[in-house]
Image (cartoon, rainbow, N blue to C red; front, side, top):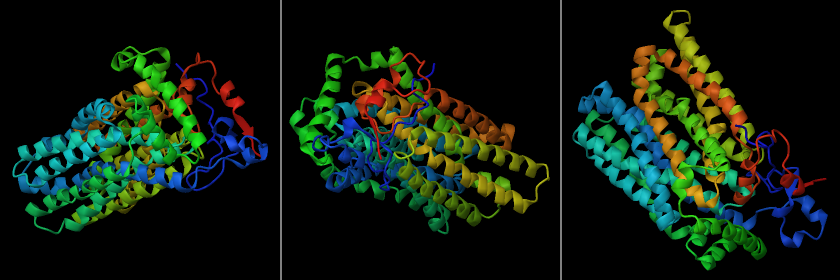
Amino acid sequence: MGIPGAGVAANSGGMRGFLGRKSRYVRMDDVLPQEQEGMEAAAAGVHVHGGARRYVFFCSVFASLNHILLGYDVGVMSGCIIFIQKDLHINEVQQEVLVGCLSFISLLGSLAGGRTSDAIGRKWTIGLAAAIFQAGAAVMTLASSFTVLMAGRLLAGIGIGFGLMVAPVYISEISPAAMRGSFASFPEIFISLGILLGYVSNLAFAGLPDHINWRVMLAAGILPSISIAFVLMVIPESPRWLVMQGRTGDARAVLLKVTETGEEAEERLTEIVESARATVADKAVWRELMRPSPVTRRMLVAGLGVMFFQQATGIDALVYYSPTIFRDAGIASEGQLLAATVAVGLSKTVFIVVAIALVDHVGRKPLLYVSTIGITACLATLAATLSLLARGVLPGAVAIALAILTVCGFVTFFSVGIGPVNMVLSSEIYPLRLRAQAVAIGLAVNRLTSGAVAMSFLSICRALSVAGAFTVFAAISAVSVVFVHRFVPETSGKSLEQIESLFGGDGGGGGEVELGDGEHLVHKR
């Protein structure tokens, strides 16, 4: 079941990318009315600039702050688990449950977040996510037993699930088409930043007594969520949600803030209103998702598939258990293990910035190709390195260097492509009536896969060896390359309402440009 037009990279509507670079084409339906009189103005490109772009930029940043919480929790737990084991005397199975349960419980938050964000709005769901996480982090910090620690972990997971679901939806709904890819990537960079902060926290507080250090590490995760109170006073509600509530006047006021002209705001409002009529006419969203039409099925295959493969290649196992991997490669001291994990977190964060700079200029699909192929190569090399070391073929120093290099390479390729693009695609491919619930299902798949990987990793390593576990991940990653080629379309530069047409053909379009695209492209001189 192929997707028509999947082999063609749509261009970015002539607007400047995140770093101000121009594409060679401009979409006529993105040209502002006052520029349509002369082809010279169209050829120069249409820019989302000035106050509107800055406003959308800061709204996207603020909406993404909750993702620091997930990243911090993932990163800090890789070091915390060492000290929790010493303090609370937990066994290996309890370690796997403690690490993996966050992903499983966050899928419940993601599923509930879809309905909640439709009921109370995207903006207030962001605030609810932060409040629930704060409560969970406080319980974990004060935990005196494994049972209490698990209770706090489960509560924090629900808050993280809400935040994971709502931020990409909110950002995609306030962003112009040409900048949506860059802005919708922000949640992933904040996850990476949170992971890096978690690693740094491990390194900074490791010297404290064992019954204190892990508590301080966990307590520090509460600080980012406090800023959400300020965020709720600054960011507007999603204009698409306002239209769904019949608040067209409020939606127009928001659009005037996120667009450069009143004419552009009215055009976007008209598109949203027309799309929202389908929502009013059809309330059975879950029924449509459970028994999808061919078009909706193609959307779900693409969206859920990318969500699955993002985690099935083992990124969370690597992040959670990087000290275990480096110890298997020959690094002995706790200080060196934690320092090596900081290098991993730094690589992940730096290259997310590269992805944000490229996602609208290069397109989603080319980045997915580079990412999945690179991940496959790094996983295969890591597996071979650990296997040769176990057989005594590789010197210890060489094995350590290769292990650090391939692990950093893995997170680099992950961050350049499937990490952020996963969020971008999932928030933009579904029509308005299905978007919140479909994204929630996708994140549930993502979290379920993450939890399964994290909770089973130590057991798989015990059964197959660490090298064997990464051989399995490499095979899964190779399948993801084929999946991207066959099922994922290029969506950059299209409005959310236009993207639906990418999934509406009979599958025979292959790499041909759609007629609608051809009519709206003007070659720039």
